[in-house]
Length: 536
Image (cartoon, rainbow, N blue to C red):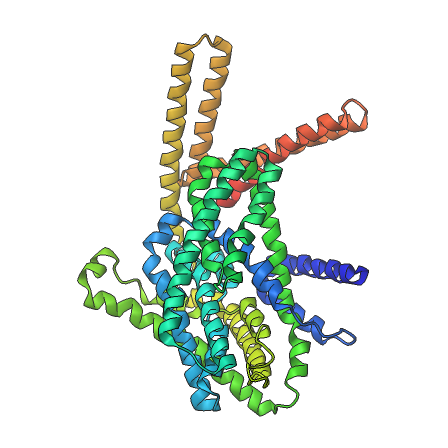
């Protein structure tokens, strides 16, 4: 146990160091983490490391999906539901069929075994490409579609995977029964997910303690995921439904203190989970090498190239026709949602990066069939899944920024961001006016001292001036806002120096110093957030 804890501490140190390098270099951290994992795995004296598939499918996947759904705008998700479903369901099924056909025709694999491999490598992982897309300031709709696809595609792939594995193990499969099961899984998981979201929100509101509420929020994705998964579903759709429900209804039922603490908790929690997952991906290299010793290098390279090309090309073949043909054939659709530029579709097609879910599914393949024979091509499936992950993550992920710049999409989302800022300014201004009117009404109906009213009116004016400085897109206003923030940071730093000096001289107790320090921390965090969110 002590050795395991020492290894965990070492891996956490690697995650922190690689994240720092990623910040300095501008390279997406998932790519560097996978490369670091491979280097550690092939280092002399390092024992083989094989990831436990249930660790990913039961412990890692639920919170990642849940927090992605929490951060997703339900309004934008609903507006883009058609392209999201075309990718999360249609493209996953099409890629599965394409890989099965390619392995059957070119490698001589049975169709059922190829279907297993296709289901494993069909769902893209949106973490790395989304990080790059946000940094390159792509249009908001591209981000929403990619994020929405990432929420649901694992569900489709895992259901297909279970059907495919069952077909190979048992030796038969009913398409009609499989379709009925899929519809039942989707409907049942949506109902369960909404029920979990409703129940947990009411329970959290009843508790009214940030620590207990955050603990319940950590339990929520597992409560949504585990029961459907245990009953033969995927658990993913239920978790997405729970996250979207809480995202839409949470602001009315979750306290401000819980939201503030929850943001920091979930940000740190996902940083650790995603960092370890990508590091574990690279650590599979040594275990992989021991599985493929009986195959020639030429055979392995050919198989990897065929499957990787099938996975990459299938996404392009699916996306371009399904984007433009319906709009040419259905005029109301074209009027309601005009065709996007081809560059958008190219980027969406190119971001089909695979991740840890594919490896976990490959590792979870049974050892034998129902007849007691070894599961056919089991080691080859794991090898090819690993190759697809490495090719798409390292190759596509590395050149994605270059592709974005070449297509002229870099910072094309800036105009949208400026429009959003103008909308935010109007909303903040209206909210400030409403609160000022409320203040005057309250003062007129109650005996409020003039000094208190004067202070509150000044506070409202200060908030309004901050709103203008924070959201105004005019150059002179932006320069004034930057100067204001710089001076405010200097003042906060000066207050810190004085408070620490008073503590050192014994003029201030530790408890009081911590309260003052917390207020200064919140002020500084607010200034830094304003700086990070400012247009340009």
